[in-house]
Image (cartoon, rainbow, N blue to C red; front, side):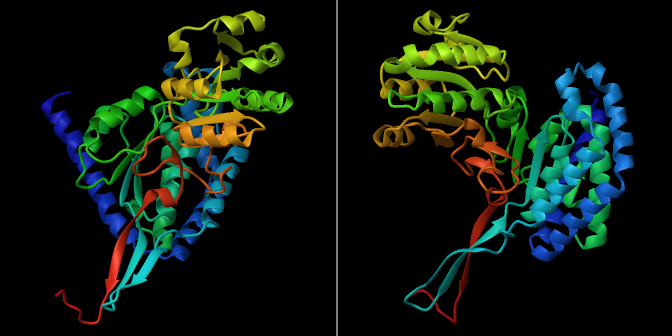
Length: 424
């Protein structure tokens, strides 16, 4: 890139960020009624202008072979009237959620009469970087604005036309509803250098949220000058304890692994207590094989599971995002916990057991954003947790962990009310 081109790109990124910063100041004072009106009006306009979105989407579908997208990726990219209606419904569901802004988290009156309120406020400006899937464009915009934040959307090139059509509708509707027009902005260049430019603008952007492959997320984490909410990968485990109900265990393993294999909360690793391995693993192996899943295991697993192949150390740490699962037979609960804390990604891990003591020890010692007892890993999701829509799942411990919904896109400040008090 020439110096002139780089300067032009930098100027563009600064301009977008400055507009977002200005919009965020206005957004912080909007009423919940105004934001909800915008969400419902936007949903209606998405439905009414579905043909515009579909026409733009057809351009993305035509370009998909050139990007090397798989059939599954193309299917996720495709929009029709039914899918656009689903996007609109998502906005309407967010409108029904309580407005977090202005919530009094704590309050106290000091002996000197000072009233101190800890109140929830927006973060400010969110830089959201994501890949493909145009429905994410609308979801992210809705969650950010509902939580009082301006958002800069940097979507994947595969969905650029679809995302532009959606954001055009959202921005036009914002102007009609009293929402700042620059509350939602889509980066209009597919130049990857733009990401680096935005990540340097911490004077305008409050937080970066990457959602996509590990390479993208690691790049953002390395280059960002502002806080990042993220998870790198989802190596999720299901551990079958010695005291497990094996019929329940089968259902949980199959759902965790096979319900949707290409998502971050799908199980990638199976651990089985030695006391039940001879009974549990052969049938589990058959069920997984019937679902097209290859088992890579330790020596004991390979003895018990027909067709299993030896696992490498890398397999135990892998996020396969497809029809492969690693497996190991462990001698104890503590060995399972040690394995998870060594190889896991801190995302989602589950135990199947009828022992309250085992469940308690597992939940206390497994260091993950969500720990499941007798339930599928697939439940680590904002909607499933009753949080409403989410912008992603975080494995960080600061500032948010687990599904990130409206409240996770807020911070707080203290409001102090006095009557002339001065400090002695």
